[in-house]
Image 1 (tube, helix red, strand yellow):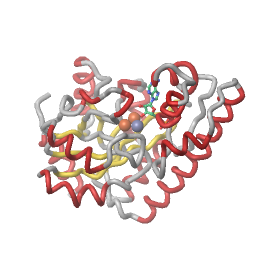
Image 2: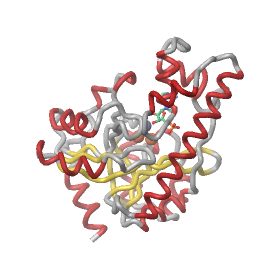
Image 3: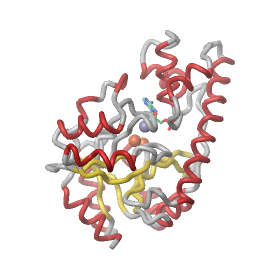
Image 4: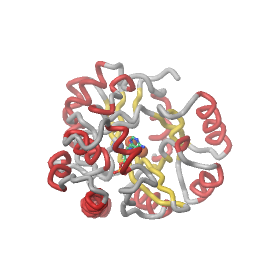
Length: 273
Ligand code: AMP
Ligand code: ZN
Ligand code: FE
Ligand code: FE
């Protein structure tokens, strides 16, 4: 896919390692002209990013990545181009972040119960004021020598189905899509190739999904083709990006490698007009 837009990235406001400034700088150096910042449950990076982006000639697309549960599985929904000062949206995001802290506490408790002596404080130290997530827990486990790698923290303990796995609070897909729509934005299903059956995808389209993230590091060419066909069939929009987080994930190479056409962003704006 030839393009200049990366519509899926994370900063220190969630589980990314770079500050908004560092991310925009690095994205610019990687050939990104339009950058979607999509922190989990936070829009804290957006206002400042919009302000500083002109220094690099980069356009910021306001975004957020929310979690929802369908058929007992977690899916991620990306919101774009909403009013990031919308009071109702901000209230919900604050609530989600508070629930994340409680869930991190439950995960640490589970770890302690299986004799992994991780301290809650070391997790919160990693997270700072960000939306705390399992990547912070994985990094804390790694730093304290309680796991041999970032990936092992997930496969052995905190990954889906693992002994210290805990769900986080989330809305239904329908309510998530409504929340984004009520603040003026568009909803996209994130990285469907990771978990979504076509039946689930159809039910999300019925719930009012606006588009599908067709380009993502987890999508091989045949999946991209498949989702682009679905997009065409249901008159949806398409998006894509690197899902860059940085740091111990060693995903530095994805930035600049999952770019999508600027025309896709124009289509998104047209749909909102
Ligand atoms: P959370 O929002 O706290 O559930 O954390 C989700 C993040 O953890 C995602 O952005 C993933 O990148 C990461 N993650 C989830 N499962 C795994 C896994 N099995 N291996 C590596 N990273 C994972
Ligand atoms: Zn993340
Ligand atoms: Fe995700
Ligand atoms: Fe993401």
